[in-house]
Every structure is written in structure tokens, then in C-alpha cells.
Image (cartoon, rainbow, N blue to C red; front, side):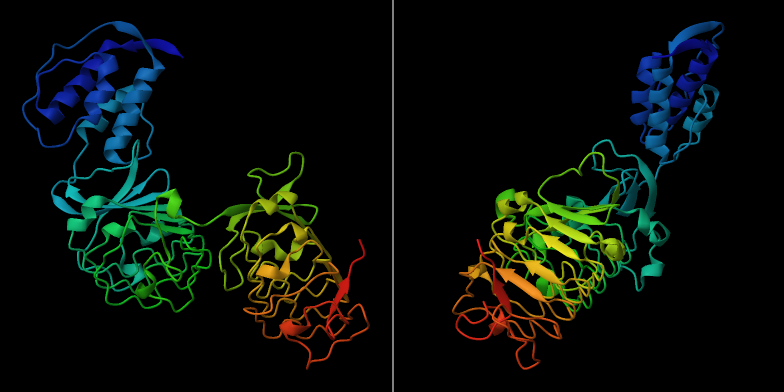
Length: 461
């Protein structure tokens, strides 16, 4: 910890500035000044105690000035640095946003906080307020009319404080519109007064979770509320459709909300690592392999019912994916849906580890348009839980062979799948059955010759 000499008058000036702002007559040790600055609230202005001007020098640790500077920044919400001689003027320049009103605060950790209280403050521990805006109680008629619109890409988290329940905010329309890097919203249940939530989360492409202890809102309209929220998953695995609205603000099988209580959250997450050599690894491991250059990473919900392309963390690099490894540790998940996982990945030539997936229910469009894939091995995959095979291999024009265990058998009921093998023109079953457009449904997801024509080939043990 560095130490150095400093003029005693610098501390006298800082103490005087504190007394100007709080109207008190106290004296402060250097180590007490940061706390005194943090305690300023703008409501105790008065005539300051006039200290005798100090002379001489003393030795002081840099940490004392670092703490005072941090306190100043916490009060003014700026990211400025301050020399010791600049601190007293900075304290004198402090002003306070007072009065009970709805505020939006952008914090240094990327949080956009909404609260309703007397004065500008945050409920987030250790928060540094970078910017603050007064929120119009009537809401906004467009995304561009929000005062924080220019900062929307800086937002990674949103917090709705409990005091918002008394705010009488009339409309939450466009509140997070275009916040592309927003990952989670906390305290959504405190938005009890808005009747309008139109386009509230439009284009929040990174949004995964809307947390709420409960929700008893007054919402009457929520047109296109979740349009573009391709990664949003409710606690039961539901992913909203483009046209879903406020009627999906609940916790049931078609709801988008999630309880903070872990016992209520059925979602399970796995990691996705795309390496520079073109291999995409899906794994329960939380960290990439050491020594391998990483191109992209992120996470997906194993049991989510994803319903569109573009939600995958690696999607912008999909043309770089040449091989896929589904790691052995993926067997730890009891329920998996693979909807759209590799849709349009034309460079994939090899997929391994499909048999490590357990409890697979939905495989909509999983390999759709993987035009570079010539064979795939499904051995080890238990088909007994399958429910939806719509377009699973659609457009795989180069796919010749699908391997499976000899005892492969679909459920006798509860399974469907329109055009499972759409335009798989090169596909040949183990007994010689060739593709025909009249034989493209899920019924042909069986071992060829066992119970009729099929497109699967039994893999010898």
C-alpha cells in the first residue's frame, strides 16, 4: 500500500467541503472522510464550521484518497478520477436529486434499476450510480422516447425494486425494448400498476429469465411483448412465441416467469463451447478445455422448448462448426429437447455422442439443412420418450445413413412429426429402402425392415 507526503491543508479543505454540505461542525480524521462523504444527503445545508487553516505536511496512505474518491463517485455517479487537491471542489459540487419519484438508474455493473422513493439511491449493495433519469409515470409511446435509450446496450440486468409497487406507473410499454444484452430481470412481480406492456421486451435477444415471487398485475395489453426473445425460458421450460403477450405472465407450462425459489425452477443449463478447430462441444462442464482456442461460448437450457433459429450462443459462427461432440456428462440431464440445435449448420460433417442424451422429447428441426452431413449415429439414444420429430432431418440432402440400436422402437402413442425426413433424397435404410416424398413422416423413423419400411440402419454391437 503506497504512502506519500501531503499538505495538511488538503485535508482541511476536504473537511470544510463536507461541513458545507452537511451543515455540521464536526471534525474528521482522514480515515473518516470517505464515510462522511457517503453520508451526505443534500438536506442538511447550513453554515460550515470554519476550521483554522492547516500548515505543514504529513504522510498518508493512498488508500485513504482512493476511498474518498470512491465515495465522491458513489455520490455523483461519475467515473472521474480525482487528485487530492480536486476532491474538495468535487464535494462542494455535489447536488442531490430529491423528492419522491420514479427513477431509472444505470449502475456500474450493467444493472438498470427502477425504484420509487425520496431521493436518488440504489438498493443494489455496493452500487455505483453512473446515470439516473426520472421516469414519466405515464410511460412512453416509443422506445426512442425513453431517456435511457442511448444506454440500452449497456444493460445486462434489470432490477424492479419493491417500492415500485406504490409508484402508480401507468405503462411499462417499451421499457426494455432493444436491450440486446439484457440477461435477467429481477423483481418483475413489483410491477403491479401498469396496464400496458406492449413491446416491453422486443429484441431482448439475450434475455433468459424473468424472476418474480408472484405476479398479480393489472395488465390489459401486451402486444408483441416478447418478440425476439428467443432465449427466454420460463421455469417449466416454455419459450415464448413471437406473438405471445401478457397472458403468458405466469408460472405454468405456457408461462415465461420463474420463481427465485430453486425448488420451483425446473430448468437445467448446459454449456456450449465452440473451438477454433471447428469443434462444438455441448457439456455440463462450466469451463472450456485448457489449451484450446475458444471462438464462442454460452449456455442453453436442456429442457427448454426452443422454437426458432438464432438462439444458440454460437449461432453467428454456425458456418465455422464442422464437428459436434455431445459430451458424456450430458447424460446427467434427465429431460432434453434438441429443437433447432443445428438448424442450417451446413459445414457439419460429424456428430458424436447423441446417445449421451437422456429423456429426449422434442427434436424439431434439430438437423434441418445440415447439408454436409452424410451419416449420423443415434445408437444409445432411448427413443421411448420422443414426442415431436417435426423436420428433424429436413433438408439433409447428403444424409445417407442413420445408425440406431437394433431394438430401436418409437412409442406406440403420443409421438408425432410432420416431414421428419423432408427432402432427404440420398437417405437409404438398412434393408435398402430409398427416400420417397410420400415416406417423409415420423413413421419411418424405424429400423428398415423391422415392421415395415424405414430409414434407420441397425448398428451391430
